Every structure is written in C-alpha cells, then in structure tokens.
Image (cartoon, rainbow, N blue to C red; front, side):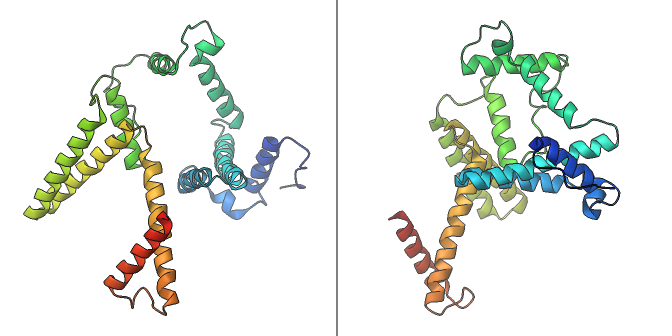
Length: 267
C-alpha cells in the first residue's frame, strides 16, 4: 500500500523510483499496475519523438520536461523488471557505466587514440570483441526496429565503413536522378508493385544523399513536416479571413493562398 508522498528533499532519481514503485504497488494506480514491457513500448516511442521535437524547438524548459517523461519510461521498465526479479534500474545504470568504461580505453586506459575517427573504429572493434567475434552478416547489427529513414542511413553508414560508398556526393545525386527516372518509367507502365519498389529506391537514395551531406534524414523530414504544417495553417487562416473553408475553396484558390503563405515566410 503506497504511503505518504516521497519528500522532494531526497535525490530526484530516488524520489522518482519511489513514486513509480508506489504507483505499481497494491492500492496504487490501476493503469500503472496493468502495464507491461510490451504495453509501454508505444509510450516509449512517442516520448522519444517528443524529446526530439522539444530539443529542436530550443525551448530548454520544455526539453527538460520531455526528458523527464522519457526517463519515466526507463524507470517504469526498471520497476517492472525488478518485480520479476530480472533486473532493476541500478543494474541498468551499472551496466551502461561498465560498457562506457570498457569502450573508452583512451579515457580510462592506456589507448593512444586521440581523434574521433580513431575512437569510432576502436568502439566498433571493442564491440566485436564483446560479442565474442562470432561470425555474422556485416549489416546484421543494424536494428530492424528503427524507423525506415533512420535504418536506411544506418545501413548506408555501416556499408561505407568498408568502402562501399561514392567518394563524392555527386555520385549519390546522379544515382538519385537515375532512380527518379526509373520511377517515372514504372508509373508510365502502371505496375503498382514496380512503382512501390522504385519509389522505395528513390527514398533510399535521398537518404544516402542526406548521409553524404552529413544531415540526419529524420531531422530533415521532421523539419519538412513542420514547414508544410505551418504553411498549410497559414493558408487555412487566409481562407478563413475571406470567409472560406478548406472544403469550399477551389484548388486554384488554395494554391494562391499557399503561394502567398510561402512568400510571406521567405520574406
């Protein structure tokens, strides 16, 4: 049975653990008590994206709040695992600490690595050793649970480590143009399966261009979504000022309002 509210004078992380423990204890919160590792996964993904959005906004107070929501997910998983005597938050923290120490021998050991490139190569080598150097497909370590754009970038980045890459971004852009041409041919042929395949190739090549230009495709897509939403909302407001709804406005009228919103934003 949950007791009194944990005092705010205690360590913040300790207090959060106590609160989560109370919520999942008999007499606690029915919703929290019902949750499992699997049922919480959608929340974990959602909170991660909200952290990204808050970081991009530049609002540090909001960023702090969203990091707290994400931390709650980690603590919840730790509490559930603890109830099953599988592991707890302390073991999670110790595990990642030990991993960081092992993989940073240039900080905690006598490795002579002194630049970022060397550090990354060293990290990969230590990681292979930790896995026991068990033979596996080179790309097998790239998680299949990643969002499509992120996984494409990860696959391309890993392949590039063994030289499977264009030396310059120009080659990637030429490939992108080639894939766009093949998509046009597929559309003209009207084969839906072929269209889907070629459109996928276009997206994969676009991600490769982003990677080559040292840009994150997920961040770019988020920014493009935000820009579209911003301009669409401005268009909607402009139409409303003319006593027009989106449903009632013609495509030509909406296009005109869209161009006006775009021009105003660029200025």
